[in-house]
Length: 202
Image 1 (cartoon, rainbow, N blue to C red):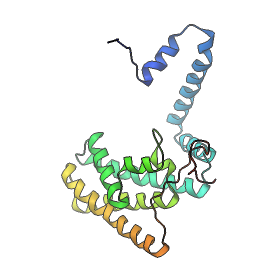
Image 2: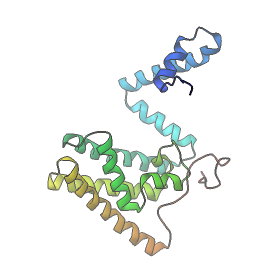
Image 3: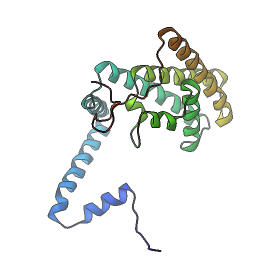
Image 4: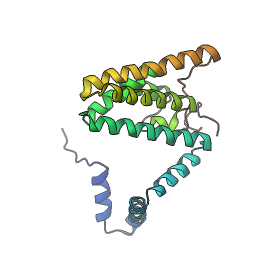
């Protein structure tokens, strides 16, 4: 048996800050730059949105996709705000509800969807197609409106709203798939082409 010392990301960055070596200077300058940008975003939140747009654009996303991604995020935020205000605990209970909604509309768990797209630590939504984003937003919008209508409190009542809201998006997905003959849930992603053969074309 051998004892090992382990650190999380914050701990590692703190260690880098304390290293008195010229080789650590590029990392220290990067940390200072990131800190400055974060302070700027706190003072002007619009800067965070602009940087997000730039990041998605560099990955090859179209302006239409970026708009849909940001709209979907706003829909998600309104849903989580409702949960937080109505006795749903952040962390595990949020994750339970999010996964339930996803399974209901898509037929697969969040993890299975990420595996299908060959994702590891990446954000699933950043690798969704436009259709996947739209159905995710529909499921989350429906869930919130149903929860508000029945005044859902706590995890059990919000689980019922999540199943119903996800089911609404599921029926719409199945109807679209029947009409077009194409599956909505896709293995396509925006990973670099050198790492996967399934990367979407910009």
